[in-house]
Structure formats: C-alpha cells, structure tokens
Amino acid sequence: MEFRELKSLTVLAESGSLSETARTVHLSPAAVHKQLKHLERELEVPLYERRRGRLRLTAAGELLLPHLRE
Image: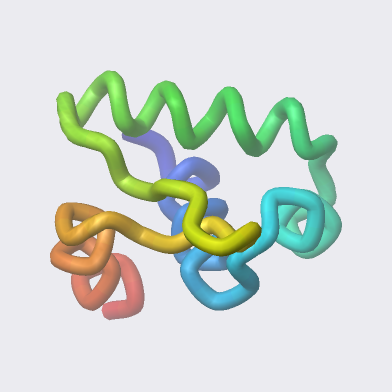
C-alpha cells in the first residue's frame, strides 16, 4: 500500500470522477485506475463502484476513508 494510491482514493471519494482524480494527482486516468485496482487487490475488497454515472466508494471504501483523512 502506497501513499499515492491512498491519495488517489481520497480524491476519488471527493470528486466521483476518475478523470478529475487524475487531473488532481497529476496522472493519467489509466494510471489512477491501475493504482486503485492495485489497492483493491492488496486489501482484497472492492473500494469503489459506478453508480448513476459517477464513481462512489463502497462500504469498505467508506470505512477506510476517515483513516486516510487523518
């Protein structure tokens, strides 16, 4: 687990958009997607899902978010 992956997840939670997250963290959307998938594999749980055209954190992602913000 790397800081940049956790930062991308935090930004995604706020923006709801992979492309907006990518702009904010200065990476390509593909690179952000790869980071987040790596984090999901490492934690063995889905952290986000697409709902109504936006990306939203799953229950597991929501549980992790307060710890990331500290």
